[in-house]
Amino acid sequence: MSIGSFCLVLHGHLPYVLRHGSWPHGEDWLYEAAAETYLPLLGVLEECRFLNAKVRLVLGLTPILLEQLAHEDFRTGFEKYLQERVERARADRSEFERSNQPHMAHLAGRWADFYGALGEQFERIQGDIPSAYAALAGEGTIELLSSAATHSYMPLLLEDSSLVAQLRAGLASSERIVGFRPKGLWLPEGAYRPDGLWSPPISWGPGRERRGIEHFLAAEGVDHFFVESHLIQNSRSEWVADPQWRRVGWDEARQSPARGWHSVLEPAWVESSGDKPGTTAAFARDPWICQQVWSGQIGYPADGVYLEFHRKHGERRGLRYWKVTDAKAGLGAKALYYPDDIPGTLHRQGTHFCNEVKRQLWDHHNKTGRHGIVAACFDAELFGHWWFEGPGFLREVLLTLAADNDVDLCTTTEFMRQHPPDKSVALPEGSWGENGDHSVWANERINWMWEVEYRCEAVFGKLTFNLPWRRRRALRETLEKAGRELLLLQASDWPFVISRHQAVDYGTRRFLEHVKRFECLADAAEKIAADPHYLQKAGAVERFDLQDAEIHDVVFPHVDLDWWNTA
Image (cartoon, rainbow, N blue to C red; front, side):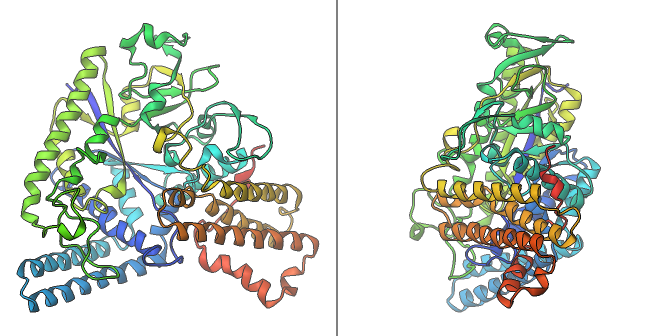
């Protein structure tokens, strides 16, 4: 009989890049992630199923990622990308053979085989990655999560209508593409806001009372989400079920430690008002288990035998032939990669990881007598893209734990069904970013973006409230396009890459492009409201500006203006 459960939670997300550049920033991000993470992960799950192993995994595919993976532009572009990779590998092999570098020629041949096999896999699933994962979800092998439509930083959005629209648009997109509406949701950046007085990060009017994010999730049928560990560890005890719910004091956690209060190994219902038990549960990311992978000091990907991410052969889209060697070594000091060193290392580290999971669960069981869960939450792209051997590591972990009688490998929905949370808590504010707060997404480098975003929210609210779009088709369609641009400019990715000094020019340009298109469409909506024949009278420049959004922004094809309706 198991003494605890393990749930691997992978958060798959990329910003909207289709039709917005290719290299070094743009569509290549999507192609690399598909080739190095999404297809290899799919292969691992299919192999585990072939071996009759009862594996379980929770996978978040954000709506904006699903929109791109399901688009025909991705399918045709990805096929060309894989063929280019094969041709690059073959050219490298010929070059290395001419220069008498047999080991590098061997590695180049492996790259050609790797991308060739991906092309065959992509053809087998008919170029439809979302449907392949949806099929695994239908079989119960995985659970799929949804998220906010464009991965917006929800606690800092100005209006509740924007928060609700992000949720509704995201859930609608997930349902349309994978065929069902997920019950679990990944909060973008793990960012949460409770009930209480809220003040914007910039000078934009006085503070006001806002409802906690859990209320909006519950209203849309979401029954669980994920938070960083410090939110659970600093939560406030409110209610317990014995088996009937009863109110408890804020010191209950100290008085009844065996209940599992403040433990990251136990989910809890969330209700920040404290008036009643919550109806949406929070699972906490286990920091110690995740540190085994994430840590720059002890993390597995830093092992010297693994493929070095940063050193590539040649210029544009070069392939990798060197290993980490030493995490502190400069790129010029990297030694050549030897694939034969990998299987033993993966087995050793996978075994260590599984033993740490069991140790966590046994410690919790011995202290409380309760059945806990280790939720190991990672960015999906770590496994394969950043850490090339990562999918092999996941294979080791899933197969090992699936065969271990001490551990129940499960999804979060399965865990909640078998072990319903018996506590309700109030969570503090925070995120999984640096410092655990909002500072990565609100600081002196990017606060100007919030000023622009808030103005766009206000303009859109005014237009959808005042203009007769329900009676005027052209007006409604124009406002729908403006709504799409509002969703896209709200993506948390643009302030993130600027704040972290990554792709600063690209992030700035993308944000401002969506703002420009939003303003153009908002202006057109006002003109259409004043003159129903405006579109027929518009000049060439105005028509070009209006078409620009349709050409570049081809996601969320069925925007519903009622997504913003909170009445």
